Amino acid sequence: MAETVDDLTVNYTDGGVEVVKELDKAILTKGAWSTIVFRYQEWDPRKQAYSADRYTIRRYQKRNDRFQQKSKFNISSADQARKLIDVLTKWID
Image 1: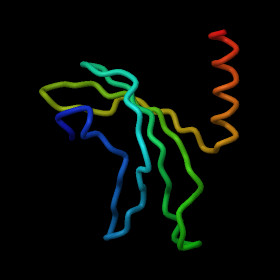
Image 2: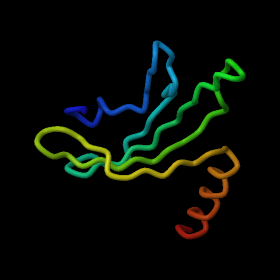
Image 3: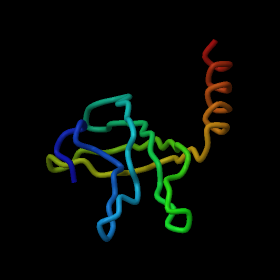
Image 4: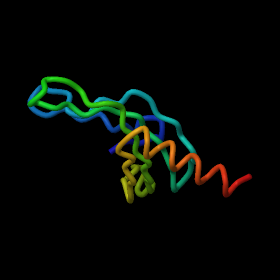
């Protein structure tokens, strides 16, 4: 596990293949509880190609000087992300 919030990633390699490739991240909150939004792609072995961009919001808790993932919400498509943005914009405005 990561020692700093900046070291947290969703990159994942299995058998020499980068199965989850992080494209970007935005740290929303830092501290004992940290929240990060990641943009990533997943490897599809059948197509031998990466998926369209996906998004995930992850919450981490720092315990014993290490961050542990406590929860996550996956946004599976750009369409779902736009709908979430629309709803939040209405609520905030």
